[in-house]
Length: 108
Image (cartoon, rainbow, N blue to C red; front, side):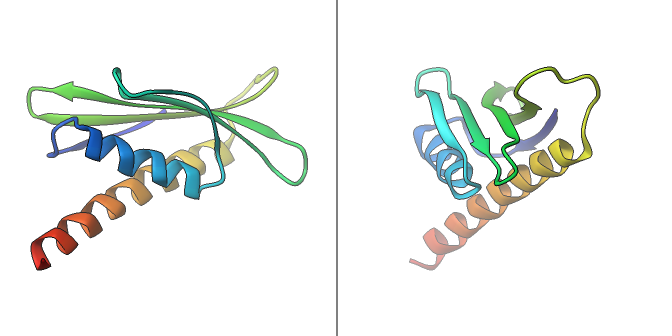
């Protein structure tokens, strides 16, 4: 499980950026909760390994926390590095997309 704290408020705009980033990583949504800002999704690789993703935005007093967890579907006996890498890539992509959106809004 990886997390990052951002200075944005937990809003529909932030949630839509998160959902676009998750879709761009190849995940298909199982459940998308706009009220609680939580997404469950799966991805199946070409080697038929399926992964389950749970991402949520949690409101904190100092900002918003993005929590991402990727697990193998089926029996997972030990944590895999590929899951950690996938979580890190997703968090980094989300932060980059937020910064890109801010810079475009500031330029307009």
